[in-house]
Length: 192
Image 1 (tube, helix red, strand yellow):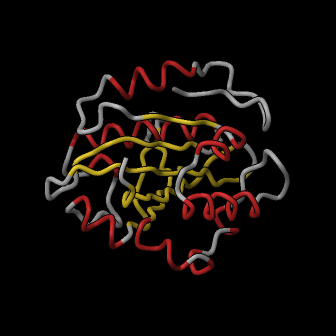
Image 2 (cartoon, rainbow, N blue to C red):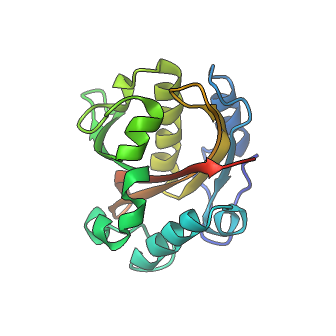
């Protein structure tokens, strides 16, 4: 389910909400019940994790004005140190054909343990699990296209085989209308 959100700007006209879930659901993954929320009002109503609400409110406070993305320079990871183990930050690199590529600039230590891979400095496409890499790329593509925050939630299997319910917020940073970085904060200690 991807509710639209007229409260903080309209969706890009070429984006259809059902296409996001259809594209993500078509991927083989440990998570068959991924749910997405797009936009400020939907996310504020739908985020379950207190830690993620804290990060989301911090993100909103960084915006120069409502509906405008904050710049990457506005985000100081040291401002929310307890989040550091569970965040990743990607930088968008354009390929010669103009398509985006995503490079992990930061990949939290807890994420490295959870997913069994240290990804700092690597491309999302280099993730050891190709299904997870493709799902991540598609979510990042949509955040970059929409230039709006997205919340994901669903069940997945950790590297050690443990079934986990995870929730994440995926937040765009950029200059003007161009997304340059995307930050994600994950909370996977919840039980559904």
